[in-house]
Structures are given as structure tokens and as C-alpha cells.
Image (cartoon, rainbow, N blue to C red):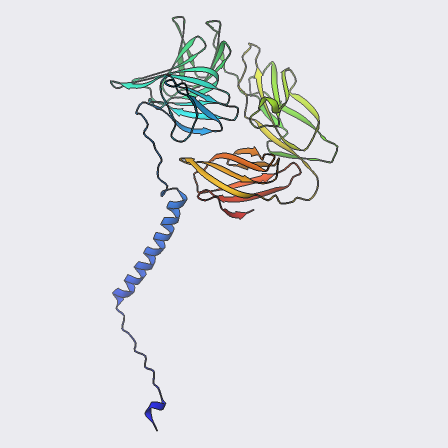
Length: 409
């Protein structure tokens, strides 16, 4: 028989050393560690460069902002919209619009939080020979200031005719409206000077400034507490409108003489969206009839027998929806722009007039369905919820790297 008619296959068994097996296992484990490490680093923005511009050493740094915040430069009188590179120098004016708020860090480490519809002028923010000097004038609105240790620091907030020097470890809120001002101390204390006369206001105290005089210090009133409708409540409209009863209570052990209630279609309580603006209410109840489907927000402040008025409490929201089956809401043209740090500008397009909510902030889509929302997120993905006044809703998980839809819920 011709030996070429058959082919033989031979298998050679290799002898593998123990060390080779150990090396292979180590390589596999290293690969797993690298994969999971890269994923963790990506989710925590390790590969995104820290975008810091050339900021002067003694500049006031805007470490966080939301909505429309602007700065008027003292040197040029130019007004600019705050971005990630913006800082403030002595003489500059920082202003927040109806949807804006900002946290400014001063050279002494203190944090000044400017609420919506507010304005401050930075008069000094310098460090010299080891000392640190901060001086801010509250022109309008509400400013909350928090200090840590103030050794070697001189931190002053001017309100109306008063100069208020903040002590160490202090939380203070200042209000300015017209020619007057109010001072509330929840922790620590301030030394207030008016016309050369000094007064110390301490924790849990309130005082007002009017006509160049400081009112007698008194106990700080607590904020009224909403009870119903519940926060984020959803009320079904059978088709003929809904009657809603608002109820609230006094802070414990701190009765008020009257209340001021606002109900709005806007979370920022813009003047053109306020439906109810009633002051002098003596009852802790208010009824509003014939409400149509949509989202509503309500808040309160109280006035005591001495005339002291609290700040507004945090707004509560409720939604009136039409009965019926829920229909998914579509959205497209998602885009994400990183403003700076963990702040992003999220945009897209959906149905006109719907509500878009993300990271505790919300907005309504325009007549063409477009929307923009500035958010802050420590992760590289975020949840976005869209709903309308009929109770329809959709949820999206959006990548903050490229704006792609990762999944729906």
C-alpha cells in the first residue's frame, strides 16, 4: 500500500511549568483590575482635566452657581454672565436673577450664598501680612454667610446702615430691602456697629435695621411648616377642576400672629407666574378652587407679634393631573455641555409645555419643544424625568460625556 494514501496526525503534549501558570493568572487578574479601575476612574471624572483659569490669588471664587448669575466689572462697567472661569475682584457687583443663586468663597475661607433676586458688592477681599480682610455690601435680596475659624481675619457684611463683623463658626443670614435690613443668627454671632455703637447679636437671635437704628434683639422665629397638600403630591382632576386646601403649622413653641402665602406656577416664583400673594392671613388654612391640571408651588413666611418676619420656607410642590391611561413622552436631540467642575448644561427637544426635572432642578419646554437645564452631578450619568399635566411621564438615563441615552425607565 502506498504510504502517501494515509496521513497521520501527531499531538505533542507540552509540559507547562508552575511559574507559567502563576504568571498567566496574574496577567488575568491585572487585566480585571485595570478594566474595573478604568471604569471607576471614568465615572468619577478622573480623566477630565480640572479647568482652572488664571485666577488672582485674592480673587473671590464662585465655587457653585445655578441659573442666571451676572457680574458687573468695576474696571470696565461691563456686565458678564458667570461661567466656570469667572471670578470677582474688589468693586465688582454679583447679581442673581429670579432663577439664579451663587456660592462665593472669600480669601478667609468663608462662603457667601446669594439667593435669587439678590445683589452684593465686593469691597475688599485681600490678604496682607498674614491678615485677611473681607468686606461685602448687600445691596438687595438675601445673603447667607458661613465662617469657620476667623483667627487673623476681618469679615464684614454691610446691610443698610450697619456693619456686621462675623465671629468664628457663624451661620448668619442678612436681608436687604429698600432702606432697611434684617439680621438672623442661627449659629455663632456677629458684632453689629451703627453710628459707632456696637451690639453683639448671638445664636438664635434676630434684629432689624431701620432708619439708622438697630431694633432690640429678640428670639429668632422658626419657619412655618407646610402640612398639606403633601410635597410632590399628585391630585387627579375628574374634569371639572380641583379645589385645594392649604394647611400649615407654626414652628414648635413659636406662634405667629399672621402669615404670608404665595402659590405659583413657577418654581422660582417669578412675578408673572404667582397666582396667590396673600399677606396678613391669621388662619393656618387657605382654600383655592378650580385649579386646572399642571404643577404648582407654594411657600410661606410668618410674622410675630413683635413685627419680626421669617424668611420664606422651602417651597412645596404638587401636581394636578387628568385621569386616564399614561402615555410615554418622547425626547430627542440630547446634548450636554460641561460648564465646569461637576456643572453641566443639559439640552434637548420634546413636546411643548412639558416639565423636565433633573438633579433637583426643573424647567418647562418652549413652544418648539426645546429646553435647557443647568445641573450639578458628581457622576457621568444622570436621570431625567419628563411629565405633563395629564400624568404622562418618561424617564431617561443620560450620559454626561456625550449626551447619549443609556436607557429608559
